[in-house]
Length: 153
Image (cartoon, rainbow, N blue to C red; front, side):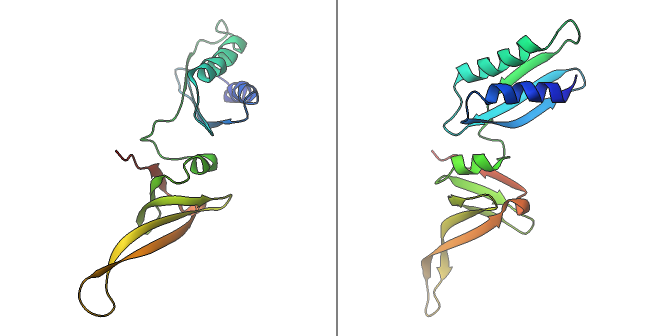
């Protein structure tokens, strides 16, 4: 199956709703097409159906049989595109880079980097005990190995 043809159909369907964006598109060897879309304010089921129909109605099953699944990203899966970071501002993220792992509130996200803030307990400079300090880290997207939204109950 031609991935570019499927990608063009997905792009065509997404163009009708600018708040939606493609996270992942994969086609397995046995022609299982899996499309993962997200939206700035979530994705209603009706939009998944609309995207699925646009793909299904414009590909010929007589020419090549396929199965199709249009879904939204699972909360347990890592963030993949920059728009997902913007969508998750003010949420707690776990972010891994090559050196360490950070957990903090996502307070900023732009084209190049993200900023996390958190509070930590550190020993006092003078005397016994600990003091709470505000910490912050700026991480460029290219340095992020994995970033996940932390689920808080």
